[in-house]
Each structure stands twice: as C-alpha cells, then as structure tokens.
Image 1: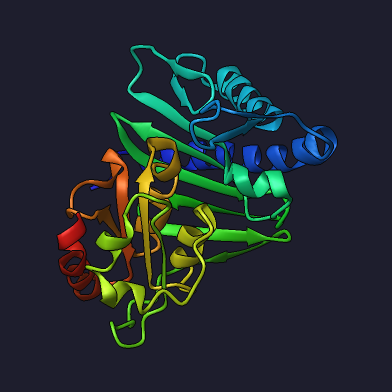
Image 2 (image 1 turned 90 degrees about the horizontal axis):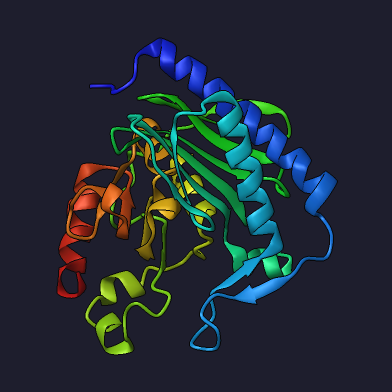
Length: 267
C-alpha cells in the first residue's frame, strides 16, 4: 500500500523533477571549475569531500527550505535538521565523489523524500551524463535522458545462468571471505559504478547489483526507484534496505533468493 496519496506523489515528484534540472544548471554555471578536495579520514584511509559536495548540499537544502520549510533534512555533509514533520529529505550531494575528483562522469546527486522514515520518492541525477532517474508513484519510474523521458522496468525474465551481475566489495570483505562466494566472483562481469549501477538495474541493463557498506544517503534515494521499476531490494540478510549497509538488488524473487543463499557465508 502506498504511503502517499496520488496527489502528493504528483506534487513532490514535480518538485524533485524541477530540482534535478536546477542541479544540472547549477553544476555547469557554478561548479564546473577547479575545486578543493579534503580527506575526511585525515590520513587514516581515503574518504574525499570536495567544495562541490558542500555547495551542492547547501543548494539542495535551500531549495527544500523555500518550498517545505518544516520538513526534516538529513545530508551527508551537514547532518540532521530535525523537526516534528513526518516528512524528511535524505541527501547525498555527490554520490561517487572519487569519480567526481578524477573527472569520471558517473557521479550523481541523490535525494529521497521519506515519509515516517520510509523512502517514497527518489532521484538519481547525473549532470554530466545529462540524465536523471525518478519515480512518480509506487509503481512507476522513468529516466529522462537528453530531455526525453521513458518508463523503465527491470528485466524480470533473467535467470542465474544468464544474469548480468555487478558487484563491489570496497574492502568490506577480505580476500578469504570473498573466496567463500565463488559463484558471485566468477560472474562479476560488469563494473560497479555507485548509483549508476542501481539505475542501470532499474532500467533492465543489469539483473543483480551487490554492494557493501551503504549509508542511508547512498541507498534511500534509490529504493523507491528500484521498487517502482519492479525490482527487489534488501540487505544481504533479506531485511529492510532502509537500514542501509550491505545491499542487494535482484530482478525477480527466484534470483533474489538464490543470491541471498550464496551470500550467507559472508553476510
């Protein structure tokens, strides 16, 4: 059952659609230039944040505040603005900051509208690729590419023998742990590119996406897009993905159950 009325989906999805267009314009007008990079981990690893991350998040927060001043906002760079509202926005200003730093165009702006903690509308906006993904209801998602919209659906006919799998473990699994899941390793034919992989999954270009260590701003915006396109998304333990962490997306129930079983030794 939908958490939002159809009229609410219309209002909020229109706002988010307009925001996607504004974000792309903002990037080319203000941020497509040299930027400052700092390491959040200060020498104990590498977790970059750029001046563009912060500028994007400030811009998004300001747009939300103008339209919905009482809503809560949770962002990767500036934390949690609390209120008594049942509505909250979860923001990853640049998903794929490492890609952004080296000029790889696969980075994105991720935004979700949550109602009572549940992601209901999601946006994955790719300014350099000139496209964005958005769901407009519980069961309708689309991609807009170079100004042309088309509805998207997962490939429900995929099977284990012919699936297109993308996975990344980002140091979360040791080599010894990875050896426990050879059926996954032997089928990792496609690169994993942060939110772009989940987006490609939602439009049927991939059949399985497996990632580790997601924060809520990494996955909340993608959950409603994936579900509205017919996909299944859970944690590796088959729990609610809004918990974030280790995430798996599958194109159908049979495939999902099989991958969950294979991952059990490391989940």
